[in-house]
Image (cartoon, rainbow, N blue to C red):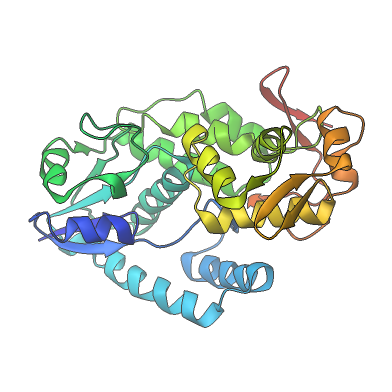
Length: 313
């Protein structure tokens, strides 16, 4: 039997109607959001992550642990399957989950069946493709037939990328954006997008924060309109409402924008930050925000838009 690991419930709905063989497992984590504890075994990793998600976002730790425990129980049986198929997309959200799962399988340290990946970057029948959830059940068999099997270089790069993603040194991760592997064609671009979530050297705004402020300079936008523009123009991130809400809330607390009846307005401080007259980080709250292994509270690391690289303040 095949184990088909899917990137979300939207894909599961389509998969169940596709007629494809195997047992389906939905991986529901959002490892691109918040702390990913480094250098610990999987049980401790999820314990620490559950505690963080509860403290930071109010996510029920017991419910989170129960869902993860069920998924882990299936993954632990990976050697019993004929093949494992990983269905993930080109964006940061999916690529972080993908390298984690590849690393998890590697850490089982047991003879493994063949592992393949399905990760489309576009689809000829779907204009402005953003993800597997946009497809129809009849689209999946052709993607399945064209799946690619992981090679040694893929395992090595995924493992190195996960270790660097959970680490404190973004330069180690930046070095990997230039490495390639046969079946991880989107990883470098996704990791680059991740690094652009560091505060910029120029204004202190990261890529997403700058995007939001720039879009409301002309006038107020509804939350939905702003999110739709983000999803159309920043597909590389793959973030859902939850993650975008977290970002807007932090920006509102910093005073660079106002949220009023689901309308988003730029403040005078926001204009000054965009012009480089005020430093965003002087107003942004210290709120236990993390991206991977890097705490954003007082980090010396910056993304230089001028040099297109990570620098240390």
